[in-house]
Image (cartoon, rainbow, N blue to C red; front, side, top):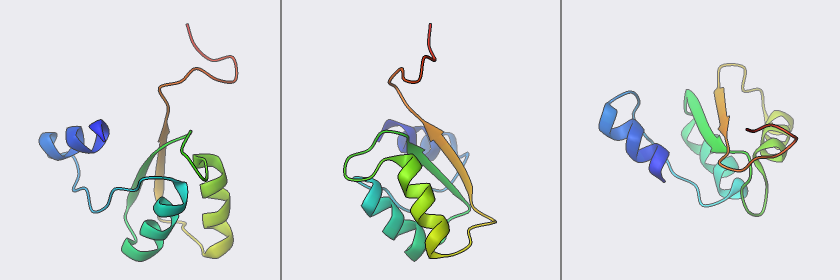
Amino acid sequence: HSMSAYLESSHLAEVVGKAVDGVDALGLIEKLAPDIAVMDVQMPNMDGLAMVSEMRKLRSHDELAIVAISERVKFGIGT
């Protein structure tokens, strides 16, 4: 959870929830209704892309900004 620690220590954002996987993240977003969701693209049980797809099915999140990051090189992107 190094990203959440960075956000908390820099006072850029208030971290209201931390998920262990995509399924947990989906539940927390529904419960907490955050303004921004920062997630890893590759998560266990449900990856970030599938989670966004499921989130759109459940309810409209027009006002939710999503920041997706990954430490892994995929889809031919990288140095």
